[in-house]
Each structure stands twice: as structure tokens, then as C-alpha cells.
Image 1 (spheres, rainbow, N blue to C red):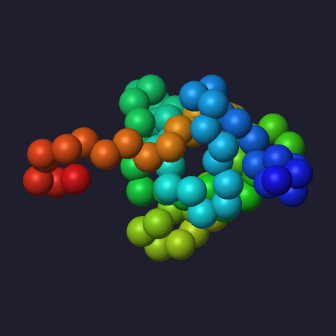
Image 2 (cartoon, rainbow, N blue to C red):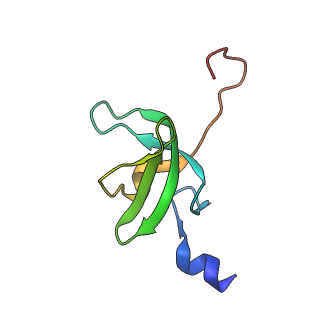
Length: 79
């Protein structure tokens, strides 16, 4: 358990976000949440994230407040 604490941080919701965890990312332009990402790594200051559509790790660090565990909307055909 000590290893998982060292490699993961808790986001504001209290959930441990480890590498490979599917997440939503706060859109910096409009403030909403975008889906289709996962945690690539925890680094100083936040997370590196991977876009699932093309497996690209984005070149910026995202603060812990700007990521959350993926939410699923139930009953909507596009989700």
C-alpha cells in the first residue's frame, strides 16, 4: 500500500487517481468537463494525461482540481 500512496495522489473528491484511471478533464476555455482521457502519470504539480482517441500524452501538467474520475451519464445514447 505504501507504494500506491507514493505513485498516486488524491484529487479533491478523495479518489486515488493511479496510472490508467479513466478521467474527465476540465476544459480550460469554457470550464466544462471533457471525457475520453486517462491518467498517464502523476508528476509534481498534478497529472500528465493521455487522450484515448489517439493514445497521445498531452504536453501539459493538469492540476488535481482539473481532473476527476470519469462520470457516466446513464440513459443517453451518445455515452
